[in-house]
Length: 483
Image (cartoon, rainbow, N blue to C red; front, side):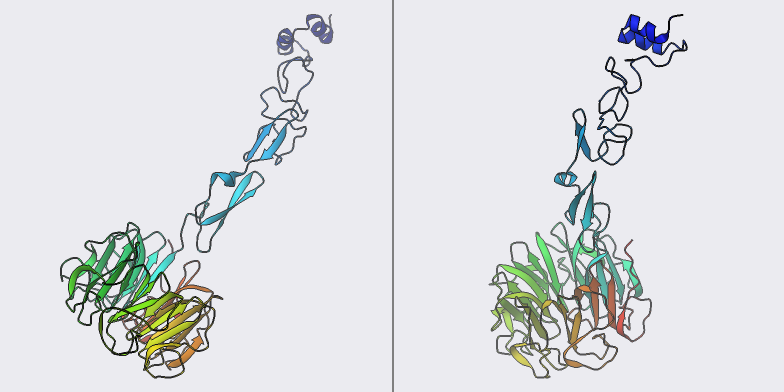
């Protein structure tokens, strides 16, 4: 009987050898047979022999995973392989931009990692912070969530919570029908919100036309503010509202008895009108009856009531159009309370002027100032905020400092004693955003990942922790989650 080896040698054809090798006639695999790992006529070819054949994608001479060519000689994800013996190279996935704009892409062996900016989560860091903005009115509070919805809580007698009723809410509830929200501002009993499409929505009391919908009808859910486009920010006084356009123009509507609309008159407006003699504005803020604007050149401007010298022009004369605040250069942020004003300068110092009955100017006195004075004991400040009669500053190390009125615990130091100079709020993690409001007697702080803390007056449940006790003198967390 002829051996299989002799038969294969005699026939010597790869195809025929392959047939014999598969015939089941008791012969082992013949040399050169097409089959596992073979390409025919080139000797035994298996994964790991450095020869690509028999359906292999690659063969780098080993059967190890993780080096681009897998243990079964297929190209691993994240690699490109070529040649014989095969050479595999890592693909730079980051060059294709797989992460969102909120991340830094880091290439790894065969893959990539999206390193999220603070407050962002998700596989590509596409999910924004839980909370991105917060504001307080006299007895109500609001927070903008990362996905653009708004939550509200506290007093609701004028529909200022926007949830469709006039019932107080001691814990957060969603504002009805509002999406795409970017910024929020609260007056005494009304709210305005700038949306991502450049429009503005408003709700709550409308006694003076502060909702800007052409009427004086109270709205318990959001309505569109008339005739506005390309809005990037909003502000609210007690009974008036402001909007800042992308082009740097300022529009105002609502109560105008103190010239706070800046149109040269004292006529109330139920729809927006442009503030006169003001351009290239970067930031706006509203006090109860006055307003502040920072221009792109760092100068500060003010208009409206000046009873306490809060316009900073050296007088106590009401101004129906903007005037420049004396002595301010390099301004990067402004804030306003009932009758006082704050500016943060590029050298990270804070300056204040106006009403000082509770030490809210932070200069160690209770003396009214008609022009700016430097707040004592503060340096390296990156953000400011103002409440009714108190002030706040955030330093670059994430610590929060407060001063001024404290009868409702709004300074967060565990007492109800006022302070004429700044003191640190204890017990908080690193803070990124601070807020209050010109009518607010409570305060807010947000962490980089969107956790919220609140303290101060709570008679209407405006702290949001489910209680309605008179005050909270140290920070607590409202019942607000990120899902």
